[in-house]
Length: 129
Image (cartoon, rainbow, N blue to C red; front, side):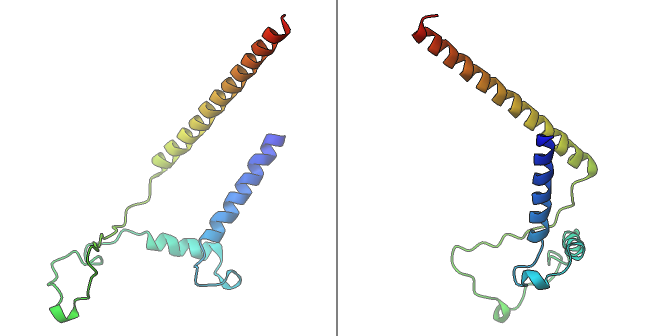
């Protein structure tokens, strides 16, 4: 029962942090839009952009007078939109995470057992049993 309540509380905290992280930093928390609207806006921004939208098409370069000054050593790396992972990738990630947590807990339990065994042998050696 205790482990289930810990999982429930951690899930609740995770959902609250996720919902709060979707708000715009410019807007105060009281006036921010509902979570559902923020999620829809976020999904629209993640949509795949075309080359024309990213200005990667056959456009002529801007005239020299319109060029902005770029500081020395500055390199602009365009960030291209990618597709969201599919359900197979997400399911595989969840299974991998569960396996990782299980293996880590087994390794931790084994380490604690070995430490207890070592302490038991050490104390028994001092006592003389």
